[in-house]
Image (cartoon, rainbow, N blue to C red; front, side, top):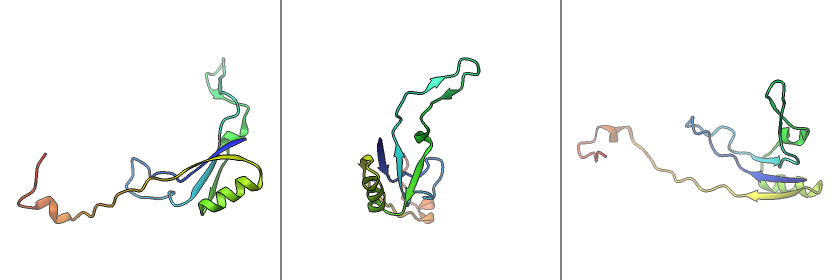
Length: 98
């Protein structure tokens, strides 16, 4: 069993940071997906692909993986720069236009 532990990034379509504060443990696929010849759906016999475990801290996710003997790859989140914005800047006299 191989898994990856990561902290999810925020959704590209939203400004909020919901569901980005927890760490996620996801299992890697054990077998390739196959296409159903009748309906054309994609399926797999590997049920671990559906499992997604959430943990409050990175250490808790690592402890879980080590407790159950799961090989894991840890992906650290990249720091996001914070740029303070002001509504008044939209109407600034010396505004730089692209």
